[in-house]
Amino acid sequence: MEDWKEDELLTLTEAVALFWPRGPLTVTSLRTAGHEGTLEITVVAGKHFVTPAAIRSMGRKAVPRTEIEMVPPGIDPAAALLRRIAEERSPVRRPRNKTSR
Image 1 (spheres, one colour):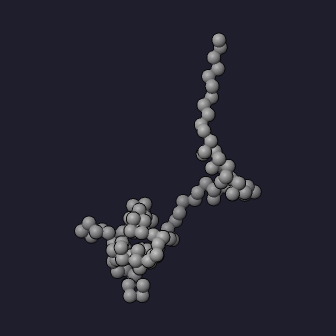
Image 2: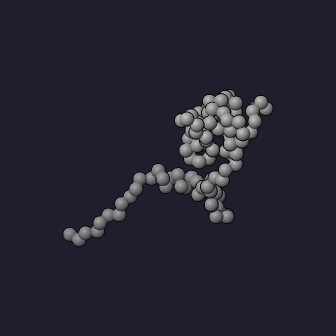
Image 3: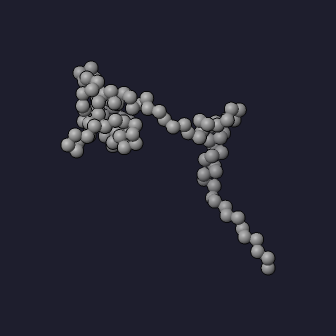
């Protein structure tokens, strides 16, 4: 990586080979990060490029707080997560119409 300047353009394939030669990120991962706005991608003649500086700053972007991070003090985050998962998995119950016969 020392051969590359911080502002030098790399193809997405080069960036993956340079920064993640054995994974976990792929060219598709970088494209997705670009579409999500977490990676600055430069497009030249329809081709996508990144810089080493952009790759390094990708992990420093602000990440929205998740609901589990907003658990009030005194409540176990793991228990809150398990409760949320159980709620998501439970079937939706509709209230019965009370009709007189």
